[in-house]
Image 1 (cartoon, rainbow, N blue to C red):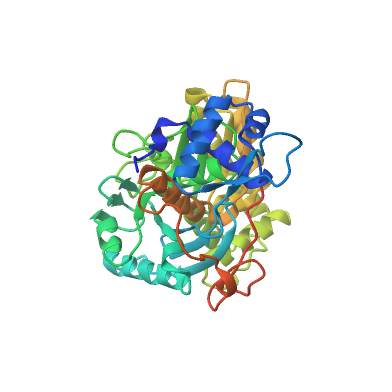
Image 2: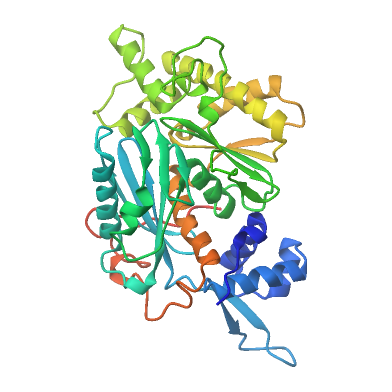
Amino acid sequence: MQAINIRQMRDSNIAVVLGMVRRNAPISRSHIARLSQLSPSTVSSIVDALVAAGLVVEITARIAKSGRRPVLLDLNDRMHYPVGIEIETHALRGLVMNLRGEILRFQRMPISPEMDCRLSLDCLVELYRELTVGLPQDSIMGLGIASPGHVDSRTGKVISAAQLGWRNVPALEIVQGQVDVPVSIQSNITAVALAELWYGAGVGKDNIICVRVGSGIGAGLIINGQIYRGPQDRVGHFGHTVIERGGKRCRCGSFGCLETYVSTNVLLERVAEGLRTGAHTQVAFPSEDRDRRLEAIIDAGRQGDRLVLNLFEEMGEYLGLGISNLINLLNPELVILAGGMAKAGELILDPIRRHVALHAYPPIPEITTTKLGSDTVAVGAATLVIEHVFENPGERVLLGGNGDIGTNGGAGAQPEAGGSLASAPSQ
């Protein structure tokens, strides 16, 4: 079968058509064209690609008012399961989802930031095996991996990831040699942009900036309906834009980088410093777990804790300045905040919006948080698999057998040990 290159189509249009099928199936091509306001020829070409890739199936309507029964479309989602795994500094986050974006299995595996890169990737393979235990092999579409730093998606190498201490790590080669499905790898910020465009707040938008603030900061760009990757995948290093001349030393070697002033690491460190120096605060860290500590800080902020509110105000100012520069440069329709900092919601959005209003040229785009929560990167990693199927449809087309997750993760099933089932991300 001839490959159908997704790069020849607008990602935003594909996401719209797939979303129409996802939400309205069974649905006809003409109905999709009316709802989406895309041309019938555009819809037809995208649907043909979806069918050829095995992601959408054609069914014949049982009843027709007159004449020939119409051909309707539905997702082929009961036997196609992409797997996505996010590499974080302190953990791996993995999930199995269906083509509707519904998360069927999820698992988090702690790792140490001092761990050797090969050992970390061995843990990633172990997590993949745990996520897919009991699934028919031919139901697994593939494995998508999202890593911090500069990732060359063509060679599969993590060129540099300062957060992990990795340089020139052949991650794709190491993982592909241990699993029996296609593997794709991309930077975590590109994964965020994919997730938001296909399944999140960006569905139907053509020009979007996705800013992920976790232990580092990245910016994923969607320009004219396409993910912008750059000629060498060196895109999105928003955290290393300099916002203060002669400022703090960054781990990248430069000075005054944005992420030396704003990140979940900085937030945790500043609050811990306040606790050590006797600052007046109601924050009480429940454990050494980073996620629980971050939740405790956000909870205190929502209760009016002055130390926490001051920190969010300061970080919101820096982020607002940086985002204003992106808005002035790219003129987006929407800015989406993702990552651990997005959990703070209005605590961080309010100061960001105020400073953007001061520094960005109007009209000011909507600024919101991700609809996919903490799963954004892993969902985007799984979406990489769907992209891979478009480019290589001969590998996994019209999978045979019954690929239902069944008692290990289908609708109504109980989660297996170490995993969980979740409902579909809200749209």
